Image (cartoon, rainbow, N blue to C red; front, side, top):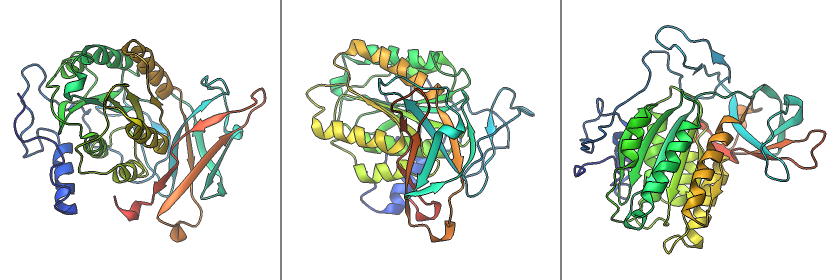
Length: 351
């Protein structure tokens, strides 16, 4: 059984200060937090963040992997450079097939309708921080086994240096496994089932995003959300959640909406909005048998992205929200579609 205290965001309506305190408590590892962590006989949350003190600092970044040093063998550490915006972009053709052989000259970037000069470009399979956020409400009881196996297949198809955590949520989100690359620990966390209570989807996403923010070891971040119902319990709104995800270093969100009696058009549209805002994708499989192929496709998508950076013009006169557009054109392709974040909020605008 989980303890009564959890990562959950429980007092957002009381005040903004209380909300940020709750989300911060959610994001802390067991060694840091004063909030008791859920007690699990099979998978005690552990932090698998690699040692070292050269963590990337908040802000914008230069997408160049520094060579490993010290105790960071095998890890890619990204150094950030002021006033540079980094985008992770996926390109598909008119048949929705991934296109991975483009060069910098094939891309154009605009911010608020103004063309921007690309300052850095590459396509590499770099390690990623991934938050797996799984609905644990009662309607998921007969779906958890297949969902868990599909997620494990995504992890196995991902970069072996990825750092993954698992959040199970119903009325509140629970960190059942902190950052790790250990498949056995992740499997144990995915098998945790309470399958009861309501669906506080937005609270779980917001708290998971804060957890990613507080672990700046890797600059590329992803959330995979799996649910069969729409939000009916969160104190965080959809608009607040979208805005939170649209911070400059926010994650790309992928969502799998399992169609059922609890996921109506409003819930499907919400998942679509969350994915579109961050450059991710949303899937609505007709059956559970399709979930495994979807998670494998997500893993392939993550490993096939372009990294595009630019330095925005007129930094001091920018409005709070910056809209973004990235286009691609190349010989041999009649139409190319670029998925990346639709915009971001300036650093000084707050959450």
